[in-house]
Image 1 (cartoon, helix red, strand yellow):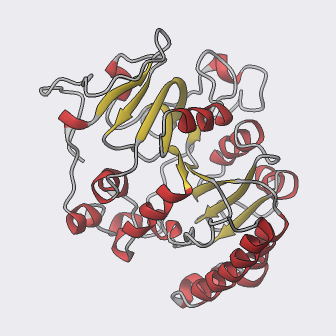
Image 2 (cartoon, one colour):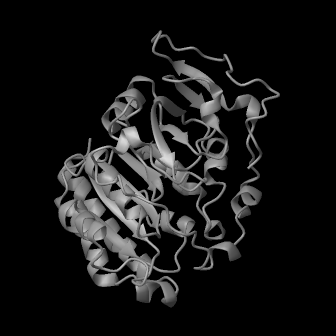
Length: 333
C-alpha cells in the first residue's frame, strides 16, 4: 500500500499537470481563472490536507445560492472531514469578491474557489481529474442550487451516507431529492435505501474508483453536463448506485420558491429567497443531449430501482423491482 506522503507527492505533480491543462485552455477561459493564485490554492489544498474526502460545488452562478453552499459546507460536508473546491462561472458583477458568503467559504471554511466566467457545468467536471483526487477516498459532487438540511426528520448526514456505502457496497450515493426531474419521492420508499439504474445529478457521493470511471465519460461536447448521469451505469456497469430516502435535499430550481421551514428554523437561511433565472453565459446555445447521442444511452424504467434495505429489515432484497413496467413516473431523458 502506498503511504500517504508518497500519494501526496503524486498529487502535487498531478496538480502541476492540472495547472498546465488549465493554462492551455482557450485564452478566454485562461484569462479569467486568475490562474496563478487559484491554482496555487489547489496545489496547497492537497499538500496540507489530512482529509480523506473532497466536496466539489459545481457551477456556482447565483449570489443567493452561496447561502445554500455555505450552509451545507458548514453543517454537512464539514471542513474537518472534507476538503472543498468550488467552481464559479459568475462574474464580479453577479458575485463580487467581497460577497460575505463567498468570503466565509474561502476564509473560514477553507474552500478553494475557481472563478471562470463562460466555463460551463460539464467543462468544470474535467478539472477533477482522477490523479487530482487520487488522495481521497470519497468525492462529493454538489450543485449550487441544492438545499441540504442538517436538521429535521430527513436531515442529511454525510458520515451516515459513507457508512451505508461501505455496509451495502454502494459506489455512488445520493439522498432523496425534492424537486427532481423524475419525481423519485413518488416511489413510496420512505426511509429505504434503494438501488437505482441512474442517479440524477444534484448531490451525490462517489468512491474514488467510481469517480475515475465517471471521468472516463467526459468529453468536450458535454459542456452542458446533461446525460452523464443517465449514461454512467451503462459505461460503468460494475458500480452500484444507491439512494437513501431517509435523507432529503431540496432542488431549488424546479418551481420551489421557499425552503422548508422546519429545516431552516433558527439558521441564517430563514430569509433565503430565489433569484431570477440566468440564461446568458452561452449555456443555452450548446447541445444538451450531445453525450446521450455520443454514448447512446437513455433511461430504462424497468431497471431503475430495487430495494437494498428498509427500516423494518436490514435484509438485502435483490431483484424485486419497486417500479412497475408501465410506471408513469419515469420520463425519457
